[in-house]
Amino acid sequence: MLCLSNGNADGLGTKREEELQKCCKFLSNCIGLFFDLVEIEKTTCLNHEKLQDGFKQIWDLDLIADIVFNYIKENKIDGILTFDKNGVSGHPNHKAVHQGVM
Image 1: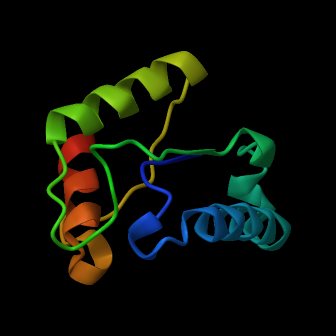
Image 2: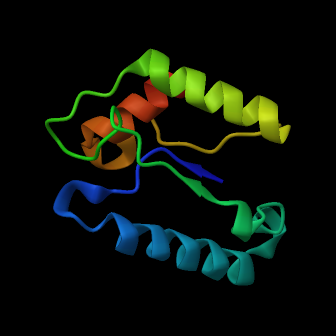
Image 3: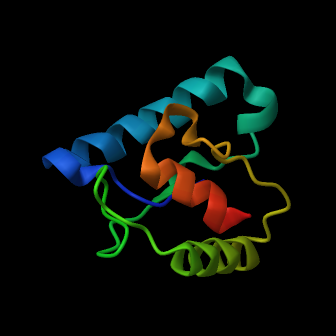
């Protein structure tokens, strides 16, 4: 699993990373069919200087594409789940992830 930001907009990046780990573990226990394929200990959560969380932060789509492409190649990924074109909640960072992945 790759998370492009640790959600540190309010200085809660470490807490958000812990929440992501707990979420993955919970999902693995609940719907193991998909998440058995995710090695929880291999969850990658980035804190890239150009991908900082925030409604006013503009994310570089080419950077997202490069990061995701390299992660796919390095980890031999054959499927992707990501945000929809509206970023689910309309969050600009979520929309950028969708666009960068596409």
